[in-house]
Image 1 (cartoon, rainbow, N blue to C red):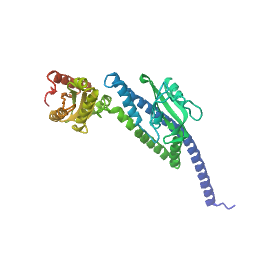
Image 2 (image 1 turned 90 degrees about the horizontal axis):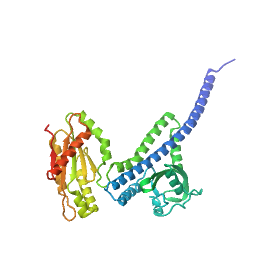
Image 3 (image 1 turned 60 degrees about the vertical axis):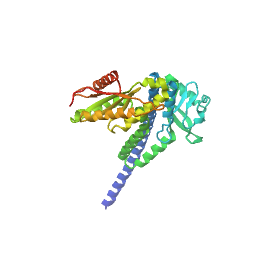
Image 4 (image 1 turned 135 degrees about the vertical axis):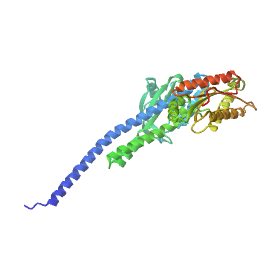
Length: 385
């Protein structure tokens, strides 16, 4: 019998190709199922995280009202302004409804604001805002329902939202995901990656990271920036202190300096001219700090009328000049028909192995001394380098 070697090899190659194609299809199917479950869960977790971030923003303004820095109404208005303008992905937004059934803020359907939304149903008959409130009061969770997309109220789309309760104000805060958007994104990623599963995993990871960074960057910036002065918050100071200490330890020619500043007689400004003028003063001082410091310096609104500047320098002189510049430009500010303010400052230079908290405490003590010895002055008691 005559055997064709090339025919046998061709058959084997054909069989291997067939097995490879079947294996690829099977792997693609299994990958698709696993990817679908993972993708949905990641998006749901992201939505839950964003709701948590939104709640933390509201909590930060609530704390300011409890500390007397803002009235409750001002704190609520600032919270609403922050979340009303927050967007992520294509159709992502936040809404707030009250537990009594009143819509507090809906950025894409403003006609619902200040209305009773308890009677609102989706096309399946679900009283969704009642469901949101019940779920939030039970500790928070997911709600599935139908809801129109921004700009098209005629078509109701499957949506899943995460809601949580901000108890001090009885606010239900929520954000959600449209399932057709998730399906479209999932299928697009799968089609692009079907030929090479390993590459698909890499692409999925990159896309997930980019989406997460893009969707949270704006809200994080709101969380770490003081809205009145546009300076960093005390929370961000706590997050950044280690990096400044590490740089101080790493570079023997640079030293960490903390400048603690306080507006003199600021309470009198509020008492005499009102909090609106006081806010204008704080805003102007914040602008002075942003304008007359370096990009690598960290300017923080520490609380009330107190500010902190963290800077690295190779000698005392540039820090003293920087502080004097801030004091001088603050004194040049005017408010309420030509009134002026002054600034007191205390400076401390970090010593070897000194904790950040102790440096901050010494700067605060020097600020106190500046206050006690006449104000409108700078106190720096560290020995010369």
